[in-house]
Amino acid sequence: MKIFLLKLLLFSVAAITSCRQKEKETKNDFISVVSLIRADVAHVDTSLYSILKMVTYDSLRTDTQYIPREKFKDEAKDFLDIPDLGDKKVARKYKNDPPRYDELLGRVIFKYTPIHPEKEEVKSQELLATPVPGADARINNVIIIREISNRDSFLQKKMLWQMNRSFQIITTAQKPGKPEITTITRVTWNEQPDQ
Image (cartoon, rainbow, N blue to C red):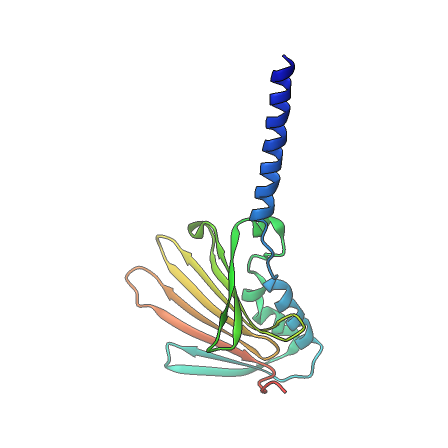
């Protein structure tokens, strides 16, 4: 009986240790894209930048208008509505691909993709960062791909946020029996090269 209890105790300790080790292995550290964009939106909200919006419809015509600062957050809603990987419940649905350095771009690329892509609208979140010796990398761009597909329609949004400069959304929509429609929305507020 004592041997049985001793074996049971050892088995329990081994199982608990194994589970804790697996938890540590599957723990992923994500950079919250939503927090980065919220900070940029807050900066624009308190700035004196002229905010310009250009919408191009199927490469045929472009509408241009200035946006008041109060409306900027509404214009950026597609970026603010993505799943926030800073939330642990949301982060469980995504995997953190190993960061890689692109020599041509001179950037480190962080990429987050869903574990089950068919269940998630956001198919990828990528951050491009400039390495800074002796400090954390500085994030320059965020790229997000979102797809909504059902029997009646297909909608894809390819979104690019350039920190402290601009954002662009390429929207492709198609309904059964109708041609594909592509709209490019570009909003700029600080289109100057980095100093």
